[in-house]
Length: 58
Ligand SMILES: [Zn+2]
Image (cartoon, rainbow, N blue to C red; front, side, top):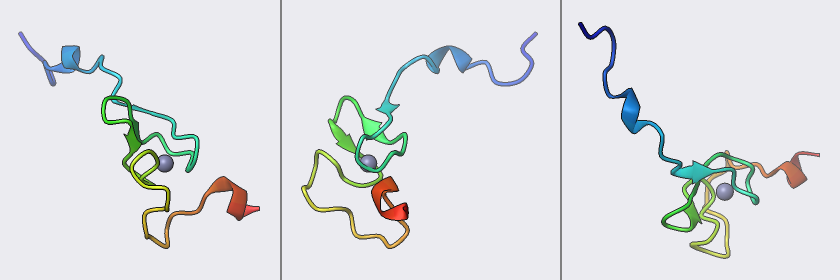
């Protein structure tokens, strides 16, 4: 009697939160670093030209 995906129960873990440096929802709580910009892992930004922090957008 299952309709659709039956593994929805596993989707209650918070893995990523909003990163305060890049603003993306990519800060890994357990690893303590952002998957998007590398915050917590490196003091420099991950080198990608598509990363545009909100400060620089203005
Ligand atoms: Zn980030």
